[in-house]
Length: 190
Length: 190
Image (tube, rainbow over the protein chains, first blue to last red):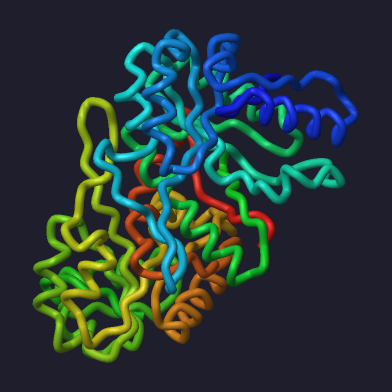
């Protein structure tokens, strides 16, 4: 697995931390362009502020690749989180517009970073909604989610319905605050 | 429990059907204005097309009442369901704008009508996200959801975050089509 960053040395340092934490040696670091060029499936996990610039700069390297967008365009004020308007409709649709030669999907919006980082937790109790218009690509991403203990990858609709999945993160943050939880979603009857 | 309809005789007929189906005599019918005037908590369940007109006409009767909006503004085309834009942000925020003297909440967006109507089903496996800016009102609505076997009422954020909860119904319809299910949501870690 490759970790990308603007500077290769920062990516390498993060990869070394992950290898040490998990007692593996399977993670390596690259600058973002090399990371994208060498990968088949690329997860875009950046702050919304830098989303468009990052993708614009990686258009060539991401051509033909399965791209997973998990970015949640949110704002925060005194009343808590809220969904930011996005001209393209959603972060995922912005990715699709900027990466016409990539196979863009949207997934992993609601996975708690706190739980992921806690290696004492053996299983994370959540489903991962996977959106996209490319059946093969969404099937691959669903399989990735299935590989994480406790998670299931569930097809969640076309990319044009990504906005509400991204924005729902604001509601889950409200749940977390009220219930002192790391809330996730399960889809019932599936 | 009162059922409202534009015409009192239609409401009375539906109430009689419900009483017969459930072997009770606790449901009665009224025209919408009488229904709203006699109730403490009013669930607005109408097609999006008629939402604004209905609420505008019931402003006086709904003053001071807890209003639960469960309306999902959706469109459908060849590619399936999608969220309609709403000038006020969401159906719930439109209700709040039209009913300034009511205590508007949003809830019950994702409950399957098919499952609700099937009296052979003893319990419905879903949580109900309850949104609103009035703590006492959302607590009352959560208690209503808790009273339905299998359901939990979970606080899901302020009314300004209602759009994505309404729109998520489009994703659940996509889930239902793919998996031949009546999908619901569970919030994990709560």
